[in-house]
Image (tube, rainbow, N blue to C red; front, side, top):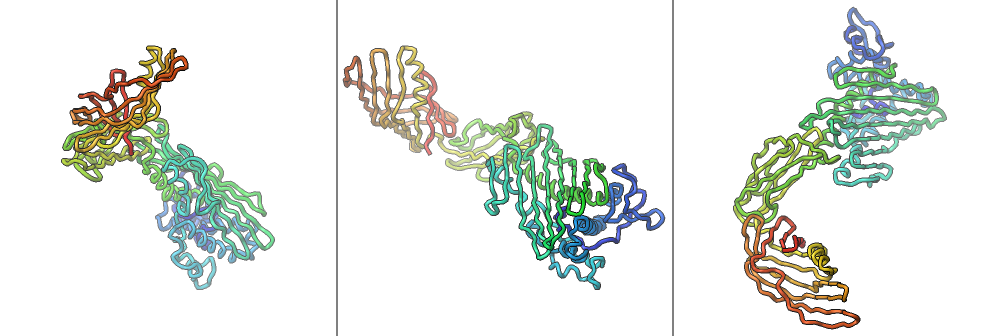
Length: 571
């Protein structure tokens, strides 16, 4: 509901005509003071909950109304509340009376409602006041007014959420309105949205909406969001100004399935103006259905009922949307093979160990897998598997080479929701071009050389290896250089050319060089005691027949007598 207390967009044009409720239920809870000042007897066992005067003691009666009665009461209470604020601040007097100010409230409601992205007023404002007398006290003026309630989460109130989900952090500005800003960290989005002011020849009214939202739950499954709505209305005819703020804070409790099972709400309304010191109405609405007043007074029941309605219709849904983005849990997916270069029609196990994206702690809960595209299958599919701490699935690859299967994974727990995809492909993992970095070569050979008193490192290069689908390969040296320094001097060896040969698979992700033809040449220079000379250099192929290696995704690992050398796939 657009029902921003502080919004003059708080819609109804009707005052009085209270809704009757059972007298016992109206005063039976211990939430606040007894007997509101606006409660008047209307018959044996009944009393009227006056919209303008209802205090904490009247809230139970309001909440026990039917939805239709409660909506009607809230509309009437909205106008009564805003008219009293206008009188206390001097705005009613400044614009020429209650009738004029009531129409301004209706006009403001339509103006701000459109910006909020809500359904808005279904009919023009002028058509709303179609009672015979045209008076704000004519019940017929209620027609259609309830439709002015919209969704305060529209009109940019979600600003910053998509950026957070996309990994952006820091301060950002709304490209559609530079006055709107958001501050984003790893678990919080604080956004401020300024609506376009309402202005006529009598008043100018500005609305600011703020949202401070945790994006993921803590280890106990709790997360919190706070909404603040502020209004400043100033008379342009020489007197009267009004400032109001309405704050609603909601703490949600999640269960092991990342579902919101309860909410605790606190609210605070404050106002001040040129004609008075202002007031505060505040309290809490625990998830058990009770209510507690902190600062009671006329209008408390209205503020509380609006806060509860706002929470129920908007805040809970906004929190669900945040949770379901799937950014609060990392699934820790680990396939036993692949995901590229899988053998055809073979089974691969995929383990998922969910952890919180906030602190890395085990999230536990459940993980669900579903084949979303491609072939062939994943099992169990569509069933939540306990992750305590790991859930295991079996993927069966396609029956043909170069086919893909994409599996969607969803983790759910107290720590929220995680959503990730894994695409697994049949074919030979090694097919493509790979590079051995100088750093990889040096990290393996350097320590061995150091044991013999030499400093050895690789520069230039890199060494490129291309494996083709037809089973052939090329091992190419483009100026790969080995520089060796000993106490007597330096030696530099530069390699150029290519070795060729064949390769074959020996197992899942395992390969071997099956044939080799050396074609690389080496040139060596030596600097000793100030002398520079070229020396003959015999080249021995870097790879030997039956050299075994493994391929996993974008890395090839080759075991040498000195340690593991890695090659990286070139995109």
